[in-house]
Amino acid sequence: MWGAIVGDIVGSAYERAGLKSVEFELFTGESRFTDDTVLTVAVADVLLSGREYAPALSDYGRRHFEAGFSSRFRSWILSSGKAWNDSWGNGSAMRVSPVGWAFETVEEVLAEAERSAAVSHGHPEGIRAARAVAASVFLARKGVDRRELAAFVEERCGYDLSRSLDAIRPTYRFSAAAAESVPEALCAFLESTDYEDALRKAVSLGGDADTQAAIAGAVAEAFYGAVPSSLKERARLYLTEDLLSVIDAFVARYGP
Image (cartoon, rainbow, N blue to C red):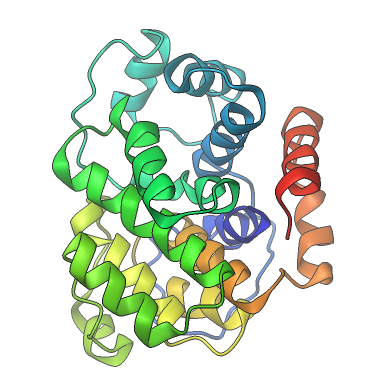
């Protein structure tokens, strides 16, 4: 899950900036953890403790209410997860990466990803996005090559992952819609050469940089084996103790 968290912190300074380059500082004075990290940790907590998703996500959201949640999701948090459950946004995908580490079959991963999404992102696009990212993390950590991973996601989730970043980037703009941001983030991973390169390519789309870097980073961590220790140690400096305690417990149980 460090892959998603470091990606979130790196991308946070460039959200809505429209950056179209892989040349940028990874950590700046504007860097911070956002709602992507908060909810990723909440999902990890559920997998560790057996809590239900809605109260756990709401609890973490209340603790870190200023982390960058949308106004609609803030309403969901304050309603204790009862306000609505039909979002088609990419929030289900940005938080789901721990699911890809916690199960031993792809069908279990797909089912749990749907369960994690359904409490707030029950729209078919929200479900599809969570399933695609969780399955990608799982397949990557199991050593499946890029081509087979992409083929699985295309067949089971219906995303087109054949596009190149050079084709996507020139006209791409910010979108928090799952269908318009999750496949692009997965394309960034597919073109990457290492973990850091995956983050740089995701941010270079010029879109929802923190979320897309979190998604690409989550899959890249699983595929390349680890987040470089220098990036992980730098990211720890931005995090609060309640988040770090869950992250460390999750990594101790599930790896990598």
